[in-house]
Image (tube, rainbow, N blue to C red):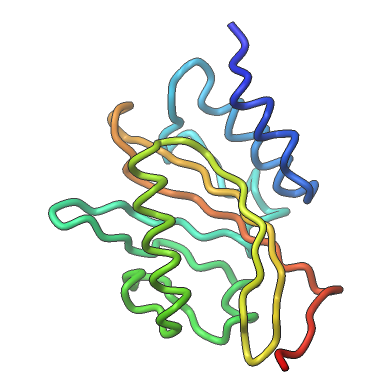
Length: 159
């Protein structure tokens, strides 16, 4: 049986690297609801690795810890969150948005594509992000992968 949710999401993805990553995630999960972390090989993801974040989902209380904060993202935002909690993000507004986004992803368990503007160093930086859930037990979301691609050509100063 073909699941239309996945076809609809694939049609929403604009960046070819994100489309390729989504296809990889679908292939790795197979007929299961989620792939496990062991199902992905970072060598296969070289084309997007610097744009990736991996977040461990911790429970009681629900929190998110960065296992990886990609080099391209770190270079753009001028901080590295690898090994730190999402609560440690220095931008309060974006931190609140990100925590709410992660909580929503854990609750829904569904992949998601997002296009948004973010202010970084007084510049408006549009991006496209693909959020993908992973599970070690096949039931609950235990890890989130986000690949975030900034659209450099559209950066503009905030007035």
